[in-house]
Amino acid sequence: MDIAALSIMMNQSQVKQQANISVMKMTMNTAEQNNINLMKMLEQSVQPYLGSKVDVKL
Image 1 (cartoon, rainbow, N blue to C red):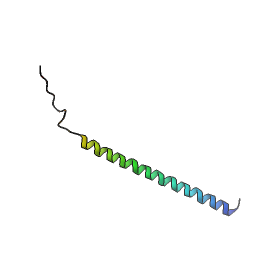
Image 2 (cartoon, one colour):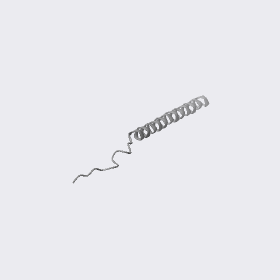
Image 3 (cartoon, rainbow, N blue to C red):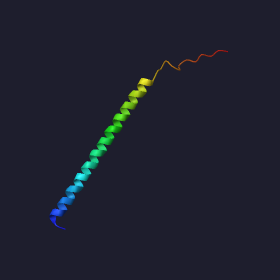
Image 4 (cartoon, rainbow, N blue to C red):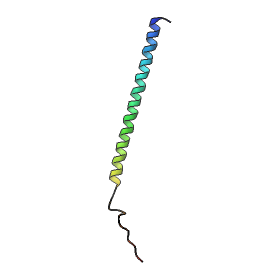
């Protein structure tokens, strides 16, 4: 195998690795944003005055 072919293979491998890392970062950012949005939604849905008292009639 000549030097040029080896250089091309190594460069392609490095590009693939960088692309995989970029996709992983995008996935992690999306998951983090989804988590933030879920927490906001849960905070808005909490109504502490509901269910704190029970009316019982005999």
